[in-house]
Amino acid sequence: MKDTIVLYSSIGRGHIFSVVELGKLILTHNPSFSIAILIPTPPNSTAIDTTIFGYDSSITFHHIPIPQPPSGTALSPPSLIFHLIRYGNHNLHQVLQSISKTSKIKALVLDFLNYTANEVTNTLNIPTFFYYTSGASPLCALLYYKTIIQIKTEDSCNYLEIPGFPRISKEELPSYPEELENIFLDIVATMSGCNGIIINTFNALEGRANKALQEGSCFPDESNPPPVFCIGPVISVPGGENDENGCLSWLDSQPSQSVVLLSFGSLGRFSKTQLKEIAIGLEKSEQRFLWVVRSESDEESLEDLLPEGFLDRTKEKGMVVRDWAPQVKILSHDSVGGFVTHCGWNSVLEAVCEGVPMVTWPLYAEQHLNMIVLVKEMKVALALKETENGIVGATELGDRVKELMDSEKGKEIRERVLKMKVSGVEARNEGGSSYVALNRLTQLWKGKDNLSLLSPNS
Ligand code: UDP
Image (cartoon, rainbow, N blue to C red; front, top):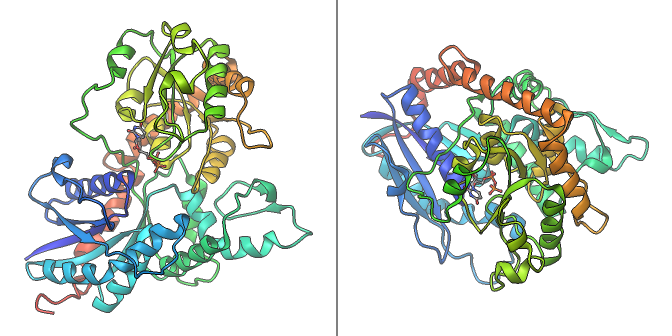
């Protein structure tokens, strides 16, 4: 029976791709394992076609149907993703039992959003690891959340000293609804008691946070914190995406490092007012741009959404595409020299791995924390300032884009991120920090026979 590592992805394209890439990385490192990837299928959605991942027979995919929540259950969007997974626990239990009939489950790695699946792994006594799909620095803040809540209420204290995180004022801390804060505390409690935490980052990028995690200083209640493995950068390069909207051939015709990409993840949408400000700002900046536009309303055309004549006036210098573009391929193109990003962690790593400096525009989830780290700690990005009504004005956007692409400060940032790109490669190479961490992890999985606790016949 083959030793199997089960990876349970969360819902959403970014998470699934990242988990698949982790599976491939584990296999490259230790081909004696087999990998089972579990993908939750939410109610009223079609199961993802796993053939798009291009994998070998050592990776198998299993769908975990998530049933409809009982009628009358009120679930609000930010916490919905956490609750839905719990509804699928019965199906998860069955799938794990079925896998264990033909293989020895050595560990189950949970995407951290799936923390409620821990109830099943506890019942089945399977060693549980977490895969944190964002950076080590926001993880430090998450683990420290109980203390953060306390400090937030103390008037005498204006600054927060979070181990592994840059010093920030209370105002800089993003605020979350209470329901979500309670979920954070549950995640922390579950993570603190797990067998290990895997993070998609590398030591040279987040040395301070990695140190705090290794030393355990951000686990305030834990005398024996779990081991942490920084194994990144793990970048997913989805295959099969041809140049549908012509971005890549357009980039071919642009000068080296001249184009700034604007792209805001899988969920970033803007109002018509905001889109107009961006357009005016880009025109003012006089920089070349490739802009992926996603609006709050799908009905209106680009001509309706953008200022009159904008597309025509900028057609020599800019390209605007609707909804989705092959971001990894764009960032790796020689013509791209800057990136206005919503600070989603995959986007950040993709930019770092291609040596592309950033302008930060955080929108949701932990992205404000990522922004703080990118600007204050790593110094690989310039921050955009919003006005009080939450809009980024045209002048601010234009000035920051110009500063990034055409100033001494922009040049320094580019040099820093290029160094980081080299460090990322070194981290993954044999003997590098991430290689060593992955080695430790796979040795742990291999070595402990008692990690295989789910008996084939249970
Ligand atoms: N992405 C893409 N094209 C787009 C927008 C996003 O390929 O037009 C990819 C991007 O390269 C990244 C992922 O989608 O791999 C988004 O993940 P991230 O963590 O940056 O943000 P999220 O979508 O989770 O907020």
